[in-house]
Length: 366
Image 1 (cartoon, rainbow, N blue to C red):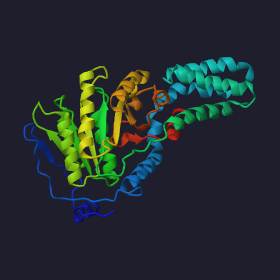
Image 2 (image 1 turned 60 degrees about the horizontal axis):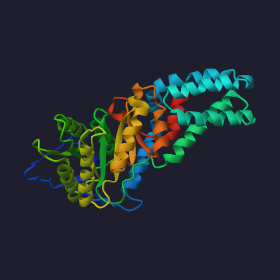
Image 3 (image 1 turned 90 degrees about the vertical axis):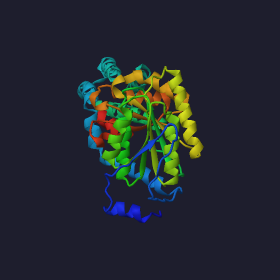
Image 4 (image 1 turned 135 degrees about the vertical axis):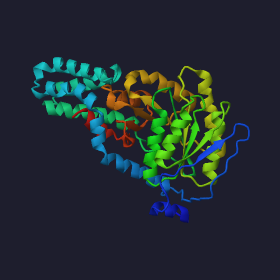
């Protein structure tokens, strides 16, 4: 990887990591003045993005305690399973499995998945494969992990090989889109990534201000629109163009929150997707849908509609620390086949965690 002296100065601590620049785009002129700093990085299969994905995945394994504490409420719901299996005997199989089924349903695993898990356990118990409570619990955890692994194989960010990689963040109002984008920027910056933010939420008055605060907090630069008539697609395309010209590694694109039933706003997402694709071939590399974990299984219709409109590549599930419905993670993966990329397990900036299926299963089944 070849870097400029300006970037090396940043790494050496001679350049403030908290500096940010506000670039204002006029809806009439669409002009901006880029700074003179340059950054170059190899983009081959073994280059920057490959190393970035590996670093994020390794960091996830080291942060298992955050994940464990973040799912405490779901774990409390499922703690009854340990009690059921502690003195389990074959004659009580039906009663135990009925109560286990109820515990899974309460935690929002969903009827279809719950029945599949319970019936598989019943079959293995009656055939003599499972002979103790500990074996049943291990089989339960293994079954959930298998579901996640089968349809959740690409948990790492898929950023391609061209600079800049473009990530669009989409979702309904109040799901935590802008906050998730800010936390993702923080994580990427910590791994040495040069990040540019794009304030594509042109509907909510405070959205741009909120993202500017995150830009200052994380030391990222930001492209914003000036005026109420600015179009989101224009803002995002200008940001990606700047990212391409100035050698940014990643452009994080915020978008307006919208109900999945508002078809005119959903069509705007298509325009945003096409706009960035005209600047960088293959962009956006990721379209991440932010879903509120408190909604549980109600998130499924949202996810289906967004996926049909723009093609969701990954999910960010937020606010799971305040929810006892962590089973929805398994439901959304199994039902939609869309990988979970990140989970929100707290309010701190570090609490947006890369999703690790094994750590998740161990967190909900203590």
